[in-house]
Length: 89
Image 1 (cartoon, rainbow, N blue to C red):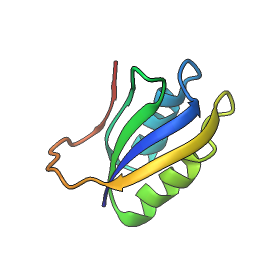
Image 2 (cartoon, rainbow, N blue to C red):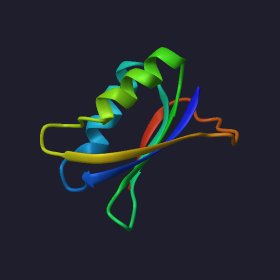
Image 3 (cartoon, helix red, strand yellow):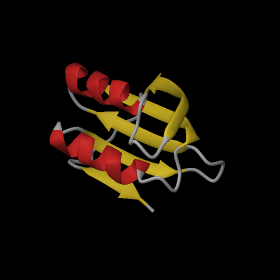
Image 4 (cartoon, helix red, strand yellow):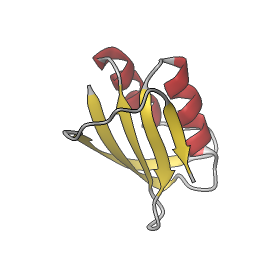
C-alpha cells in the first residue's frame, strides 16, 4: 500500500517529522516526511495495509505537542524504490 498524506494544523515546529519517523521505522514502513512551505507536513507511507493504516490513525492525533486539524490522503501511484523512511529537511 502506498499513501500520500498532507497533514494540516499545528504540525511544524512541534517534532512531527521525527515522531512520524519513529512510528514508521517501528512498523518497517518506508517513505519520507517533510515540511511544506505552506505550513503543512507531507508524507509518503509505503508498507502493508495494516501498518500504513495504523500510522495514518496515529497521525490523526500526532505527537502531544501538535494539533492536527485535517489529513488529506491519496493513493500514491508513482514508483518508489526507497528501502527506508527518511526525514527530508
